[in-house]
Length: 321
Image (tube, rainbow, N blue to C red; front, side, top):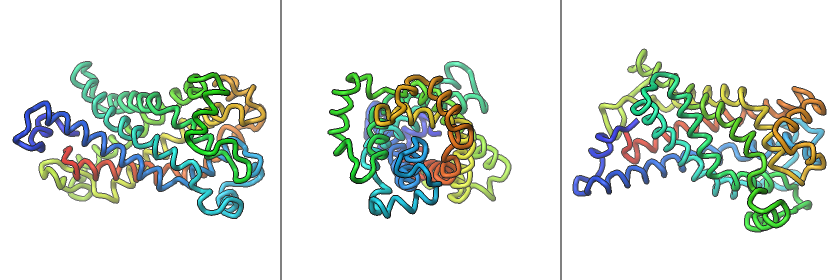
């Protein structure tokens, strides 16, 4: 990642040091936000189907992944596959920006201040960055899930603002927006941690053992080696698959808790342990805790591949290397 000396060298020479640092933070924020938006837009239809399956939507409860993917356009039109994506974009830009920027800062903190380096600091920094991003943007995620769960002709919320107002008035005020936060935080720690850890480890191994085959000079700083685009995509996809497998049951519990009063069995999903127990005893492992996992592999691989690749591209475009 860029060091402070590199940042100063890429900034305009006429700017004082504080301004250079400010522009670096702004560029870093933009790079992460754009990467997040590109990744989520790529897999928005699959994300909608995943939510419908995880929470056993009554209109699609007897269908599988691909059957649901085909059924949604028939019932709701093709735009139905992107339901809730507007709220997702409002959430994902700050989420991606905070996550990638926080990862860089936590990695420096762990390395320079605490003396933690090697593979461990990637895992720790990734977990901390994911948790930070989740806490900052969680209310928007709740809104996005509620909108995505709705089916045409059975709308409880008319839009983002109406959903905010309804949840605030009927579900205990601000606390209604943080329902399911604990399983999200617990699930995000291994997900983000192993995602950044796997990608960072594969990147460092590739550039150290086969720099000519897998790498090339960065366009903004020829002294820095970066992975070739197709290698970036492959490493990002592997990172996403490993991270999702580890954290998926917690993601299922989080979705059910977020949906709250929409579900008929919401009273059994008030805490993380109760939700996991209810899903396991009612639906089992394959059809409960890991329901929709096949879809999740299909969506998480391109999502993480696009996210990491876009972020690496934006770092070069915005002179962050």
